[in-house]
Image (cartoon, rainbow, N blue to C red; front, side, top):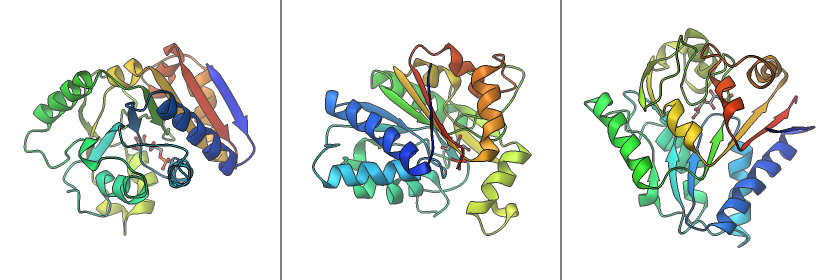
Length: 236
Ligand code: F6R
């Protein structure tokens, strides 16, 4: 594991963007696994700047996102598809038809999970997966459990996740209670994994995840087994 501690969110974002940019420069047709939430906002901003400056060309890139709330359509401002369009896809020269997010409105979420896993396989897997981490150690929306779930699947969000994500909604009651998330298999099969975490309140879970025992009760801990993992953390 490559564990990097930096002193500011700006530095974290710059490093993460540089790693993703390098991936795209070295392999223009890369498959990028992307995340939402507040952690990657700075990274996306930096990637947009690099693209605008002509330093990175996303025209041949494909992206697959980790997760989506169940019941939120792409035009819902709280949906992860909307988030990605707003914060990244509209700001870089990616072909939007090659950007994938699980369909949270699919009538059959199980079938949607199977379709999503087949899609990732057909794309040849993920070259680099960007991850944030929840306070309970979730990655994607793989919440603490007795076991790791391999495939893309339906999850009931942990009360602590609903609480944490309420900041993006008008009230806690509006946070969907279910989501569809990529499973641990696609994440672990990504050729590279880049996890970013910032804030004092993530320090404890970062320590437990990357320096403690590997357990499905702390889903991110499984990443310790990944052969090419980079973690960037800053306390601020
Ligand atoms: C989002 C995702 C989540 C977040 C995590 C941290 O697509 O998969 O695992 O990365 O909840 O969220 P923030 O960055 O908002 O602290």
